[in-house]
Length: 151
Image 1 (spheres, rainbow, N blue to C red):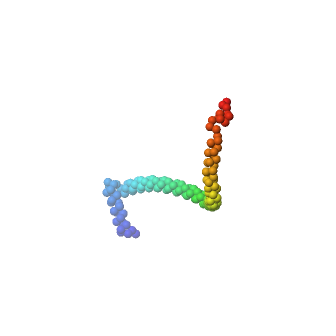
Image 2 (cartoon, rainbow, N blue to C red; image 1 turned 45 degrees about the vertical axis):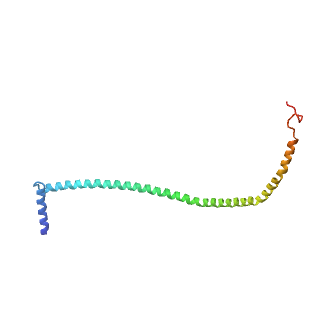
């Protein structure tokens, strides 16, 4: 038993199909509707293919990003492995700085003794200068006076 609204709906569909298709029969309008449905299915298939292509491209980009993350992780691990070596080198450099500082302190301690020796040498300069002046006066002015001949 059909409900009265269902019957009215069927009558309305038949009359609208006849009016919209130039008075064609309902079976003709159903073939037109089938063609429209087929076109819609093809359009949806095309759109689905486009979405699939976009998803594939996104998947490839995600794979590339994952590879980049792995490369970054490997480099991070390499850097982390080099930290102990760098720390050891820094400690060795600090020891060298301390040795250098100690050496500079030793040199600084020897400066007073070196200064005393320089003062002794400086005090002997006047005497050395006098000896050079005496030697210069005693030195003959010309080689002939010294008994030297030209060859």
